[in-house]
Image 1 (cartoon, rainbow, N blue to C red):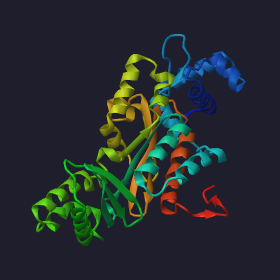
Image 2: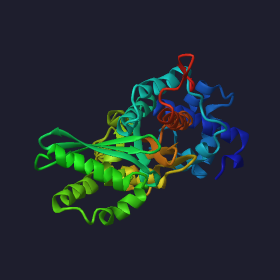
Image 3: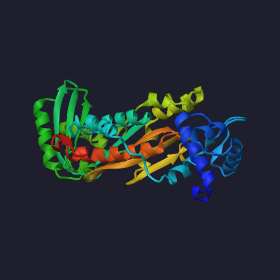
Image 4: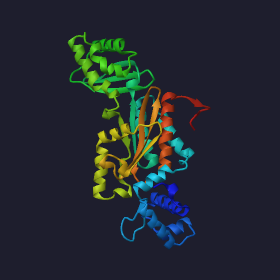
Length: 354
């Protein structure tokens, strides 16, 4: 059922129901609809149209004598027929740009902040998956002692990004061994693509001594592999409280489902990876393959930084402000790409994106 197949009256009433329910989270009655939207038709006529819309699968009645609520199919048709997305206000754009500008090119920090900003503006769960670096090339790698049992690994990608990882050790690594490792790693890995590096790492260091080989294996297993998008620590999310505060999730069962979803980082990472898209991907309710997502919608898009790309998005109840959140994830993706590419570029003291 497409909205184009509806009569003008049916379309008007259906869209009024969607807008009203998104705003109030309450089933929409005919009298309230007639009064709120000044439809110039009687509540009885509106009820008759509601019955037709129910028959077409676009709305439903949660219980007898209640108003109507959009179905997943109704939301899908609403989204598919959006004439335009909402405009973010100047203040909302500033809320996105200003916090991110405070961070350097450290990937984890700027993406963590991006998830927090997505959550704040959308009042939902903000999610960000780090760029896939496997197509990038290694510029430099440096090992530093943080303490007797911790190493700081700094990995520079030629596109300009920096990845930092703290490696826990069971013993202190002396400075002379660190210097030797730094020289060895950079001599043999600089300029090599991350994808090739991960495949040929063992072969490239086959001739080193046992003590060096042990440390190299730790670096490979616990550090270099984190450049792969499937590793959990490259995922950031924020705003669990926002989702739990939604009226749809007031019951114990619904709260339990959302808490389990938030706890299942592997599911969230899989969903974001699966819905990587140059455009905006919108998955509504029952369209989700994951049972834990059946009461939620996921709106995602990809952000790019030279030869790397990642995914960001918003998760919330199917009753969400789709036009506004689509605009939000698009602007966030554009802003991330811009700031990571030109972190200090301004025009007359103001960021060009403003």
